[in-house]
Length: 226
Length: 113
Image 1 (cartoon, each protein chain N blue to C red):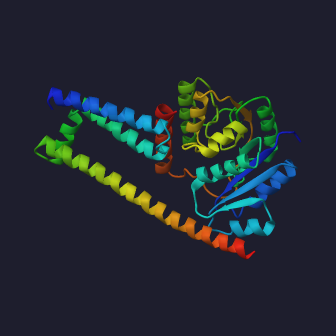
Image 2 (image 1 turned 90 degrees about the horizontal axis):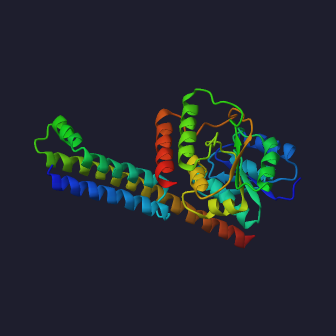
Image 3 (image 1 turned 180 degrees about the horizontal axis):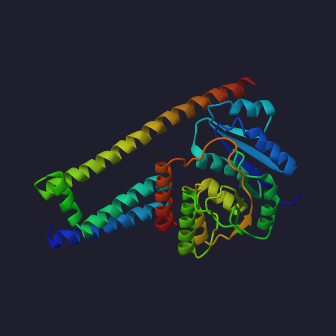
């Protein structure tokens, strides 16, 4: 284990079926790492389950959505003095075994390390990946940096970035924030990871209209606001 | 539309757009709200450069005077924005209530422990 203290932040909204698997993955593959589950006002048994199993967690009294939950995690990480913190989804998509490699890149001086699916792999031609391609191109045009997997939720931040994400407005864990940080001189590194298919839950952006809304808002935000 | 009016419209809409971007940069507006306002102000810029869009829209709706048509369209958009705000405020109110109640219950639990 490294000297750097890392917190694994697991936002969980109605994840009663997958949260145990996620924690087991962390305890098995990253012994000695701290984690914090942010229960984002779940309406299923997630909250009780967390209490019963004695997992390290905080309960948000109202549902804030992914951004608010993750931001709560960053606030905790900052106040508890962690050197870096990673967002790790509770629905079984992310794999804990890659985090140690990502932490090494923080030690090498990077501000943000992305667990990326596409460093040495190509994106397929699904609608979803076409969207991701558009964002990659836009971010490149705006910042000059290529981010192969801008929509990856697996992001590791150093302490400076933790403070920024925890206390400022408009730091949702989305591609537009990456563009914003890049334009302010943040150094971003991508590490190749594999992700699982979701074992439970559904994507936030399921359906054509939510996906279109997401894309419009990301495009506008990257072009005008970063 | 007279040339003077068009020039005035273009200037105003560009100024509005710049002001919106300025306020967002100063972190006074969330991205979600900002996106709506940017789309809105870009729309204003576009229709002041190409007022033909409004002319044909008004014709399509069967309104005789262009200005009346413009008013109806603008009022409708403002109407939609106000409704969106009402939605947001309602959600905020509910969440604030939940938050205060939860906080009160937790502090009672803490003092009894």
